[in-house]
Amino acid sequence: MSIVLPPATLQNLRQHARYPLRRPCTLIFRDRSMSCLLVDISLGGAGVELPMHVSNYGGFEGLRFQLPDVISCRSDLRWSADRRLGMQFAPVAHRSPALLSLIAGLERAALDGRLDMSGDSAGFARVVNRGHPTRLFPVSWSAARQRR
Image (tube, rainbow, N blue to C red; front, top):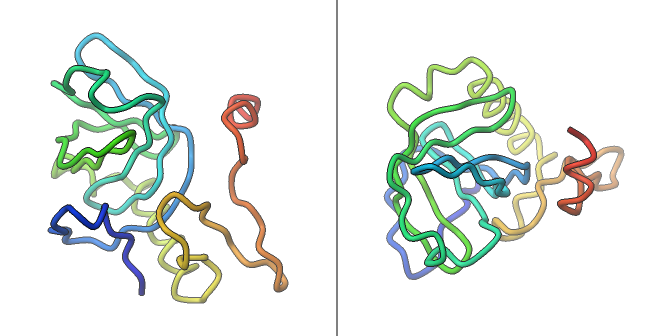
């Protein structure tokens, strides 16, 4: 099983395997709500790509992570670089049945060889269908917005 690592300059202290997955998500901090792009996820946390450089936001106090129909939980910022950040979910997050189901599906796909884990975490997670890779999620932000 492959694990998606954070940028090479950061130490990897993860307890759970992280799976590449690109979906629209929301970060809530201070008095802001911001649409972002989920890049990878595990039972313990997630990697997110922001619209602008991390330094433009002036901190992430009171951070909450929301993935529609899956999870909404308090999170702690663990690392940041350029437009990316990694967060650790609150300890109760792993009790979410929808998160457990999502991770189980990703794990089955990875073990069966149907989840493309060969690229870096910025690549799309793809499931191989009849020998042809099929995109799980839209390629662009505008396409993602149209799905809502």
